[in-house]
Image 1 (cartoon, helix red, strand yellow):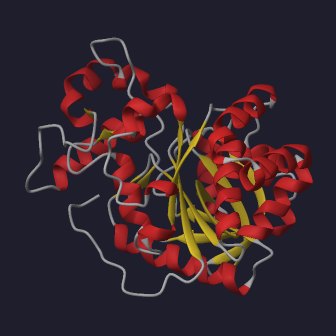
Image 2 (cartoon, rainbow, N blue to C red; image 1 turned 180 degrees about the vertical axis):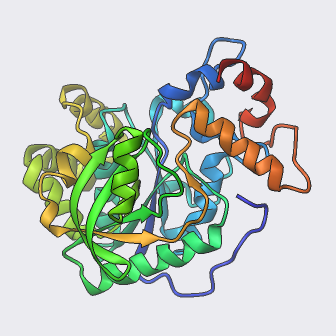
Length: 329
């Protein structure tokens, strides 16, 4: 993300942003492991041109809502990485989950906290491990997505990135298009290159895991799939004393199965899923060492100045590890 910062000047209304920052980044640990042997979760790393990827996501969220209505979900065992960061949001909007039980719990817990405060909330859900070279293009689609959710609150709107190559390491969404919005027909996870090219020729887009949804509609999807988990977690969030909530959440997480949001929640009832095609904006999810290397190369090629030092808001500068990347990638 460029060092440029945008300011919001509109009433955020009931628009909320939820930034997912609790992942482990296990596929990148060959790049993020420090001399001590500890691997830094990638959301707390930098690409060398700005702050951490998490800070980039916070700036991205500011294009659709206010800091007061931006929440970040983190993991308690990552406390050493996030507790002293200036994330430019109110302290109560930093939501710590006691463990990692998959992406579903990582969304459900902050969703319940947001709805407890604002029952009419609509959410834009943003991962914190993305790079975008043209943020203004993506921003226009993010705002469009929130508008679409207001008009059709019963559907969940996925943001599909215009595929810029046949990448076999990404997921694809196939849709019946009506302009730049379409009904989801199928998900294809990590196809081979030939299949990926065929999907793109049919209008397939990359699955970014960015999505917009009415909060109550999203909660209903959880209730259809895991009602007991929703009931217990809602009781803790809304009725348990603040002093006991983390302990009770820890007990609930310990006995809960790992639930994948895309596979176990969204894809079980695709009829209400729609997808918005985002114009090419230089997006990458930085999910593999290869994509990190390619992204850093592009940033260096496009930048007139490129910082070689670690930004104080990031614990590790991945661009500064380029020699190691070349050797291993």
